[in-house]
Amino acid sequence: MNQPIQSDTALVLFSGGQDSTTCLAWALNRFSRVETLGFDYGQRHAIELACRERLLVGIKRLRADWAARLGESHTLEIPTLAAISETALTRDVAIAMGADGLPNTFVPGRNLVFLTFAAALAYRRGIANIVGGMCETDYSGYPDCRDETIRALQSALTLGMARPFELHTPLMWIDKAQTWKLAHELGGAGLVGLIREHSHTCYLGERGAAHDWGYGCGHCPACQVRAKGWGEYLARGG
Ligand code: ZN
Image (cartoon, rainbow, N blue to C red; front, top):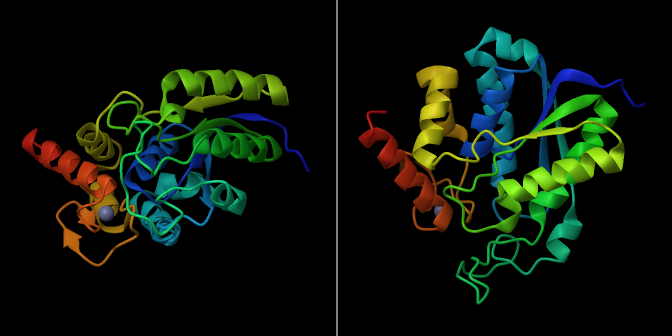
């Protein structure tokens, strides 16, 4: 059941958003076998999960070497996360800032849970590297996105599973405009176009309205961050 560990393999946390699609391209340029993992925890932007399939098809069409490296796509259901979260991502409440200084889109410890499940799956699949789109630059203050948290969790997972896992966060120190630029460096205009058209970011799960940066309500924090990043990317020369 457990496969021998292979150092040139990676598991990418792949939600179907802009960040995780860029991370997937980053991993496909570095590792010889790349698998993806998405989570279904009753989030309102469940449409993200539907976007994943279209993005995977598009990624394979972009480059033959990526198609050869791209392996299985996994989905894990963790409804428990919704059951213990009173947040605007999983309940029908308005997005607002909480008294703790964090937006109520914050699901406490979500990335700790995601990365621990990812490591357990990676263990089974013989995968040594885990890639996630956590970022300190444009983030909303989520403490489980911080580099210090990720480094500590890497140590905990390596100790707790007796496997030398490496957690990679290629977006940690760049902003959203630089994430668009990175996508262009990795996969050219084809990848940028694919991300604009098929990746999903909107917290409200809207895909009706088309903007130059993609689809979304245009008003929620996630749409605002994405629109701002796209505008800055163009202002810096694309
Ligand atoms: Zn939105």
